[in-house]
Every structure is written in C-alpha cells, then in structure tokens.
Image (tube, rainbow, N blue to C red; front, side):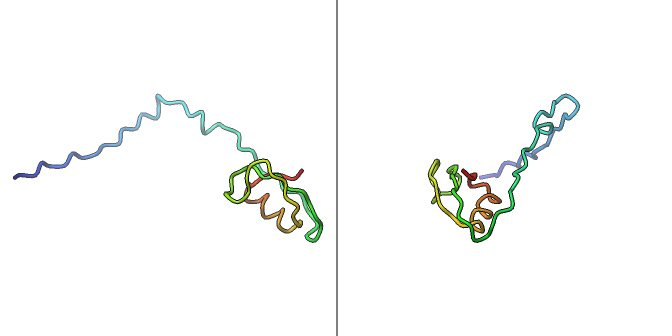
Length: 77
C-alpha cells in the first residue's frame, strides 16, 4: 500500500482586502481604586471564576477585593 504525499499547507494572506475592525476596538481598562487593606468591602461576582457565581455578593477585605478586581472576577458594590 503506497502512501499518498502530504499536501503542503499554504497560508494565503490578503491583508489589503480585509478590514481590521477588531484592531480598532477600544479596550476598556480596569481601573482599580485604592482600598484599605484591612477594611471590609462588598464585592459582586460576575461569574468568570467557578467558585464565585454570577450576581453573588461577598464581604471581603480590601486586600482580597484588590486581587479579585485585578483578575476581573467582578466589581465593588
């Protein structure tokens, strides 16, 4: 049984004809306020992390809230 030769994959790039709408998208930066590390804050989860269901409200310290905000797990209430 003879093996067929593999087809070479060719990457065709026609950059001149395509519009790059994704490149023009404005990226929203996550602004994190300065929080007191030992203060208590209410954090609303957005569901991106498996143990923080969407819409749940958590009472966390400022240190934990800062970490959650940096990771993008939700926002402060």
